[in-house]
Length: 286
Image 1 (cartoon, rainbow, N blue to C red):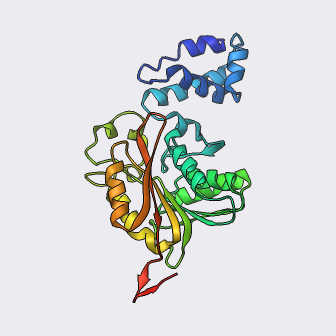
Image 2: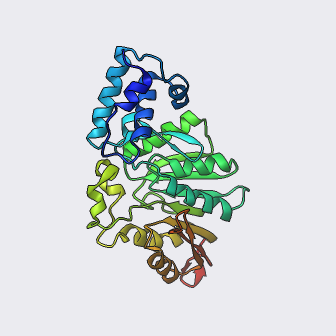
């Protein structure tokens, strides 16, 4: 039998930029142990069944399949989330959106909405950090709604719910104090769509027209009808899209428009506050 260290050294993942880490996660999963166990007991033998599971996972990874889909889970914020191929894999960059929302809104009771929730990552993080909030997450994909609901149930969270909706379509008459979204924002012609993990992720969660802004335009246009006065809209977007997103927010009547930078210095989240309620027939509509 091979030892843990022998298997890790011979894992052979030449196309992965994080080959050693990938191998550790896959072997830990095959063994039903933690990554720290592998480092502590690197000279221990691995039984035949566990090695076979590990080799099968390696084959999937060599074919390009993301580790998160192989394992069926991904860490986000302080949470360990179930993931599946019909949802986008939660990424550390999106934690900036959570941080920005928490910094803007008080911890007192309010209504928050996560558009295009996928795994529920953003909504779940907000619900964990703000127990007084009532959080709603929506997604047009029924399987995503079911998966997000399972994540909430497993985490024991009761201050949120998930439902099926194509953006605001099923939310007529509902208003929120805070709306957040990590919508599709990649241009259809972007060559990165044919590279790396994104090849395995659902195109509908990635691509938004020729300039990547189609869904952001829809959200910005519709959001005022679903925000309370002085409510906030926060959007994640591509590293070079902030000026365009700020312009869209300003044109839609949002004020205090700004962007937030990620740790790499890129503007990745833009936001704006609704000054007034929308008006109908000259009167404020609540």
